[in-house]
Length: 288
Ligand code: ADP
Ligand code: MG
Image 1: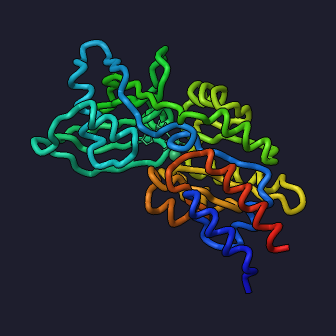
Image 2: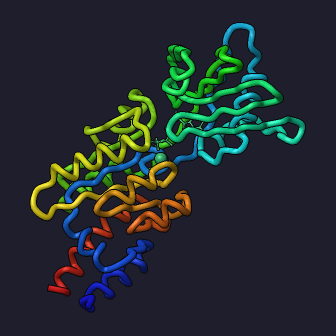
Image 3: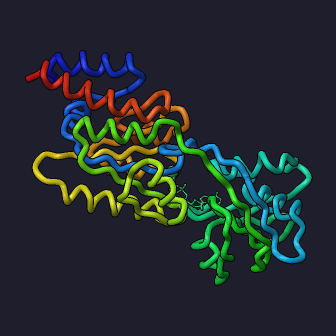
């Protein structure tokens, strides 16, 4: 039987925009002392904008953008959405076939009969192509046509407001360890980590690496201390499912993530986590 206090706690949480999927998660929340954040869409807004086009010699900017947009035309990744938006063209006049998306890396397809790839440095490496050095700050999408680099797109995201204050609030609420995971490159991870006040960061990860690191951190916990993972759900449903408590951003999050999550933050506001911890602690007082 579930103690009555849990119902009060869940009701209290839901009136604050936090959906908790059962009393056992409220109890687990109360024991959380480590929070692992996914970067994109969680600490940042996950709303990307193409800021620079860097074509290789002899390639036209418009052509670079169009190839990127076409190869990405069936992807729902926020990076892809930003490229579609920057392009603004119509896919109807083109043939996009044999689309294959690799989570955490990129996408490839036959576009008007040509083999096109768009993705990060690791994705290029698989095709034996070295990624160009780029000075601009941002997430990079390199575009390759028939094994020739066409150029790179620089894409930027923004921090969610108040993230630093939220991290401070979480520490005050008893969180001892704050961690950030990302598939993005090290340089961007550092910038976001610095702005958020999180020093333990792991970058250039594939979705399965996020699970491995989470398991390692969970194994390091002592006593009954629990680990919460907070994600937006784009590529992070596996890690949300693996954590003691998985929390998803409800607004941006994919249906898969909301399903995999134990806690859903309805309005995507990271500060809700502080409220959730406080409610869990108060509920415990009622129950015990
Ligand atoms: P995060 O870990 O920051 O939430 P993801 O795991 O979704 O990000 O993606 C990690 C990286 O993989 C991105 O920063 C990007 O470099 C690359 N990537 C993933 N999906 C795509 C895509 N559809 N197009 C281009 N690059 C992609
Ligand atoms: Mg993500």
